[in-house]
Length: 559
Image 1 (cartoon, helix red, strand yellow):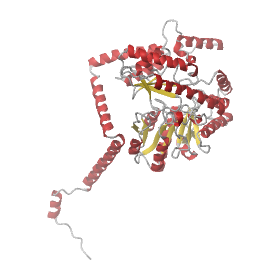
Image 2 (cartoon, one colour):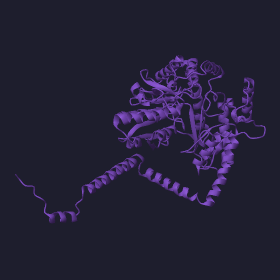
Image 3 (cartoon, one colour):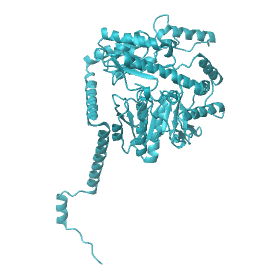
Image 4 (tube, one colour):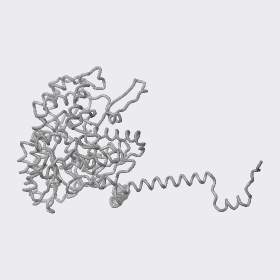
């Protein structure tokens, strides 16, 4: 039997002195190598997606922000900032909150209930207190109100009255609401050429988008084992994608768009895809300038790399599906200008679409539809917990209880309008938008239209150094127009609606006059930034924009 030879003590001593490691030391080395390699891989992916120039720019912005945050902590800076923020707060409150001794406020419950007559009279009084900007019927607004007409409003009120207390969380109690919701989803799926697909209703475009992010995150986790999800989004995509990513813990790669076509840079999209990518995003049409991304090219990438492709049609809603039938999809003279390119479920690789029924569908506010290519993908949107003490709990979207009256109103609006009604609406609204775009191109040399918007939105920027387009927006505001200010580049847009139709000539006349005013009497506020939802008349300087946004949100709840 062979004996076990022990190592020479002198050899062991020399081996240890030469740097031999214990198993613990080896484990630490392996852990160090693992951490360095994984972080290096993350850095490589980040640099590949953003590019060196953008990464350096982002780093510089982060350093600058940190330096600014340190600087504003100085007592002298704090005093100045508080003074400036105080002015901003007053400015925002002046625009949003009525003031004066004659303003009635209802801060506590009344001791006794009020009559219907008193309630209606008080509502009318509040409308008067808010001034002319509360009168949306004058039509000088960009989007915001998608009015289908007084007759349709009466239909909505009747539906609300009939189903005021209904709740789709209890389909056994309100079976008609369940049926109507299913039919709304079915009608939208057919509009977007996927009758065998699946979907749900949501409270609006933001929730539809957040639900899409949640769906792809959970799908990628289960199917592909992705634990550090990333999504690739055009710079012109709606902010709701960032919001959804923040809620769902998904990293966002923001991809620039071509400055001429306004379509997302496909080369950059391709470069940003990696094994953690869960979804790509495209718009048809986007909110800022009304252009669409190259959905076909995005679909090819989504198919090749087995990732989701969500097409945001919230703003395109009941316009883009009818452009082809309206004879408005081919562009002018058969050219590319205003041409609508494929965007729906007929495109290979498109796996979900969001469509706002409360925009050009003229349904009551608070209604949208999120659609999926198949029911299997929709499952990842659901939330189900079987072990709650109150019983099995399941909900298709973020909300538990939902207002069935909104579903009934949406169903009623779609039945009232029908395909013919939406086709006529599409033709009128898009013709109005193109008249504005063509007039800017042909008759207002100081401005240019961003891209080739195929639907209802027209954005214009300045090509004359003597004209600040945001000052043009301010001048339009003084003429009663409520438009939207944009950045990257600085621009102003109008989302045409039915309310715009009778005022299109007035808009063009006022725009020409506003350009001349901005040119002849510039205010020097070329770096102004406007808050979404507050209008370009509420512009503020870019410094401390986040704090100003917080002030704006606080003011919304000032009674």
